[in-house]
Amino acid sequence: MNRPRHGCAVVAGLMFSLAAARGQFAFTDQNSVSSVSGQFVVCATENNVAPSRPLNAAASTNVIQLQTAFLAVSAERFKLALWHQLGVPPSASWSGRIFLRLRTARSFNETVTITSSPFLNYWNYNVELPDILWKTRYARALSGVLLLELANRNNPPRGQSAEVPPWLVDGMAFQVLGADDDKVLLGAPRKGKDEFPITRLNGPENDFDPLIQARDILWNVTPLTFDQLSWPTDAQMNGDDGGVYYASAQLFLTELLSLKNGHEKLCAMLSDLPNHLNWQTAFFKAFASDFARPLDVEKWWALRVVTFAQHSAGPRWTTDVSVARLQQVLSVPVEFRGGSNALPVHAEISLEAALQNLDPAQRDDILRTKARDLAFIELRLATPFGQLADGYRLALTDFLGETRRAPRIDVANKHASTHMNKRVSVADALKKLNALDSSRREAETRYFASLPGRPPSADR
Image (cartoon, rainbow, N blue to C red):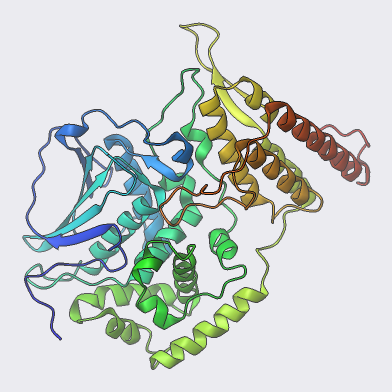
């Protein structure tokens, strides 16, 4: 069945939040900012002269607040990270310009719209998005428009826009988040009334394994088949399956790229997409040396899934690194001023100090972030520091009154803490944290005493 020539240029895999259409659009220079390469132009609508305030502080670790200048930098970084995953050199040229238009957010579930438009000998793209949205939705939007721009580079604008497979859009979005989360999610800075910088505390340390989130989700769940990835349901794309679809898409993409010349083959597939009515034809053409038919993909994918399941979450850190990483996560960086005209002074305080001295909204936001970061590192920490990290995480979640399950990046674009328990008191939380600090110091003392040439009282 032929696609209508006048119809929508749909970016498959984003339909839960993105509606893509072909049309004309224009930007004014007022309130617009261009990225360093000139490919991105960011503009705020008339009702977005001032940025929105956070819609829900409790969910702020899973959302990003956008402003024009920061978005221009963030989008450029996301592009380079995506290009890096595909093996595209950072100095490569681009074809179509991408216009990012911010509007004031009214809720977390607003749609993000991608519009493609022919212009002279190439395509341009318009992305309309709220100024506050889920991080995963932001990543999927940028992944979709950047892959669409790559696919349409050699596609005459008089033709039909490319159809990008859903698993590629979503798998790439989560791969970039897993590898470069702290670099590509550059939100607007905001400070509380006591001048503690909140946004800078919300970046998890994902510098060791881009698949850490996928491993967590797929720990006891079988990844989707190739056929299921090719035709995801609305529930899966909404994240109602607990993120299994997204984790499977990221893992599938990672395994494809690991094939011989995988990066070149995937780029060839993207370039060939406009020449076919469906992405499957371009896929099997590009990967002809690996898969002759869909059954070959299923057999290969099943083997990769078994191999994936046989591996642990990754090699553990050494004890020295484990001690340093745990200490880093347990410290809370803050800024304070000695006077109204004094320069800010950077310092680090303990979890106990944060628990006792910070404003409740700031405190809970920071402790929630720390609980998440502890969950990320505990599987990598050497014994017994992994158990200690889990103890700290449970102490924080008990104080916050949240579920004891390890927190995750919210792939469903919904508030992760749906099961609330009775909060323990500050006194009880301090008692638990003090006991854990004592156990941690004892564990460090035992370890350093066992090292040759190291005094038992080695101060870390």
